[in-house]
Image (tube, rainbow, N blue to C red; front, side, top):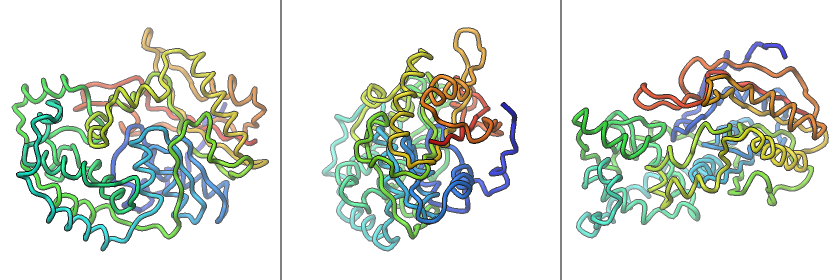
Amino acid sequence: MSVQLCEWKELPKNMNNRLHTICSYMAMFPPCVPHYFIEKYTKEGDIVFDPFSGRGTTVLEACLMKRKAMGNDKNILAYLLTKTKCDVPSKGRIISRINGLEKKFNPNSIDITAEDPNIRMIFSDYTLKQLVFLKNNLKWRRNKIDTFISAMVLGIMHGSSNGYMSLSMPNTFSMSPNYVKNYIREHNLHRPNRNAFELLLRKLDRCYQKPITKGKVYNQNAINMSYIKTDSIDLILTSPPYTRVIRYGQFNWIRLWFLSKTGKEIDRDLFFSQSLPKYHDFMLKVLLEMKRVLKAKGKVILIIGDVKERTNDSVINLAEEVWKNCAEPLAFKLVEPIIEDSISDDSKVSRIWGTKKGNATKIDRILVLEK
């Protein structure tokens, strides 16, 4: 398989749309990647679908390009972030809702003594009372304004500048509570008093943009996407989970607290395996479902990173594994040679304060398949 020119690298990384920055997410790919392939393989009005939608990058780019966008993710955090980008309310209505919530907030009526001690070590009592109030009052599943505000809350919950609500820490993901606890002690960190309502309005000015086209998102298992009609999709563009690289629940335990979930609950429902044969079996089932929903001659773009073996540090070309053991046996066609994309930054490598990294590598490979 030959290395090809990654033409999307000539495009703006975020495609000049601020809404992509509403909340960071583990292993997110830059918007220029889906933009390039959507433009190459679809036309206006075509249906673009991402069954592992993550923060909704593919869905948002499809909406911006006047395609019919659909997303899906079993992870409630990813589902919320994708939902946010599918139907954006007016900025004025968001501002009114934030101001209304602030007027309703009464710190004396909020009891935080029963909150998780691991959460209490990250936020000041002043800020945590506001977070608990927002957590209890934002009905994000039913109201798109509350969905948008909830996504902004998740985006500013923790980070290293005064635009975030926590003590200084990375904003992309969270390491274990014990790691955070030790780091706080070693660096003598203090919980800042931050006004959540003020920070939300500042975040809104930084991230707001409204696509003309709306999308849809589902919260299903990618192996059985019953809401998606057979032979209905023009293009599937996604980055499926890699073997044993990321525990999305564990690495988002702070944000999941705001959604009344734990990392263990989420990881129990998501695919994660040490076994390459189990990964083959999972991807076979996923591709079989993709084949069902695709139109004849429909395309599948899979962005799959190489991973390191834990035992001997050797590297597995996971895209090649998926092609040989999953896609080719299902009679998919390889439209072009597997594309190698070298990642220049650390966006695909799990890190904490620049000192620890996981089993992802700086090589992504892209499979372009046809039904």
